[in-house]
Length: 458
Image (cartoon, rainbow, N blue to C red; front, side):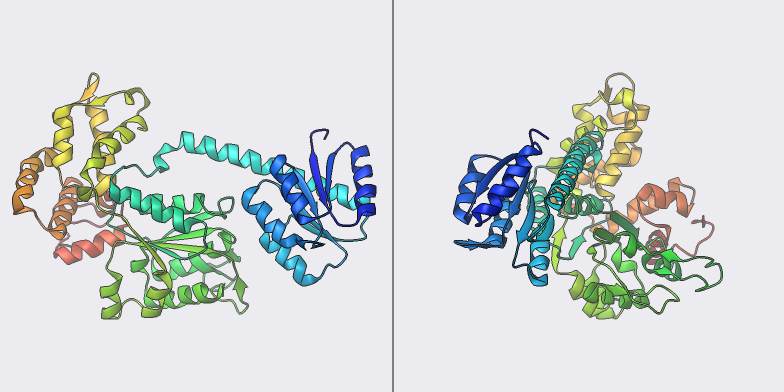
């Protein structure tokens, strides 16, 4: 306690002297200030664990000083002390970031108790910050790797919107790292210490998705033997990430729209409203504008989701990042003994020229396979899948204008993986990193989903 520094900001000299004397006797290091400007000068000269702050001061409002403290010294806990306390002032103080709010006259024991609680919270926050840094070191796979202008722009957009509570729509092809961007948004936000909940909207059928998102009451349907809290409740005060939002059916879209507009929903089979404070981040690899025109995606929901968009470029548009990604995947491979292997120049050239329809996810799978097959200290072209090696000359040719369309590249890659899996949809979907439902939809587009001899159900 001898190192706990407390600043008292109050215009009543007698109150400062009495409380300050008693806190010093209790072992605290106490400084005093009678005005806002005096407090600013003191705060500029030294740091404090706790500030006891009056609201009405001769040269300004203590709540304005509170806001400045929380912006420049976020670790400092501020306790509001005022004889003019009102409910409105208390609400404003807590919104700005006050730790607690006590009305004068208050007992010394109450002040000491709130200081001790503030110190406990500080300790927990410091421990959490250390844990976060440790997690970032042991989970480097969650970093967004790349130095191209396109990736730098993604980082810039994340930085600009992370601290807000705005809804974000992440757009990009399968495998580009949309969930990594969503996690980065949450990690850099004010909600970072609260839950981050991922919902794969494409992997669940309508009724199950509704129950997962909003929960259900006991007896809502056959098998609902107890109350189930939905994922929106689980994410309360945190962030919910709705992956593949374009796969959500119109009835679920209506319920999502209500949550986005009001923060309120009802559990399946329920009659009472449930209110939550949740930031929504959504992602899609589909053209929502076309779906909206076709009537399969609600226009009002689209505009609610499309508040702030972060587009992620496909890997073929940022080939300069391939060496960095390859090094990242090798160094963080689950095959620990092979993390020191290097990729030969010849193999890197093959990787650089391949079109990567599966994007960074496909590259990660290829590197993992190459590490398993590789012998010695480096990965060579023969360690790479034959499809990657065969495609390289074609890609070289595409640089002169014979480039296949994106749809064709995706079609070739998906059918190749399905063929390698013997037509087993579940295995193919796992390798592709998409849901079986999404794979079925794509195969249907390709005109092969109904051929049981070619594509087997899981």
